[in-house]
Image 1 (cartoon, rainbow, N blue to C red):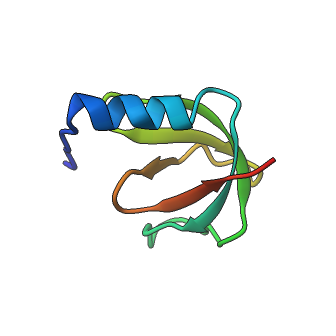
Image 2: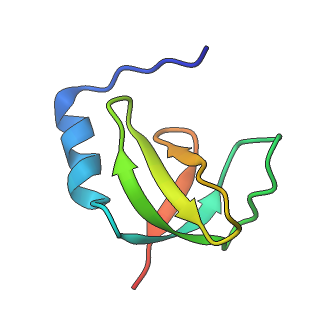
Image 3: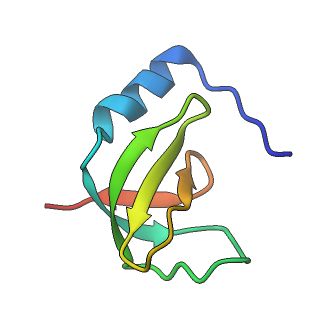
Length: 76
């Protein structure tokens, strides 16, 4: 199982940068089991204790973006 430990200051920065209801766009997701194309938009639900940014995506997925592996950007 995947496990990652982030320094507290990194985790807090992620939570500050991606609070609930932040709109984001997917730049790249490294998950070969899901169809998550670049440009897909979604809304942040939460940042978990491992740094996973849980997002409700416009395609119905609730897959988390994983810090250090996947790339998202904030949008207006």
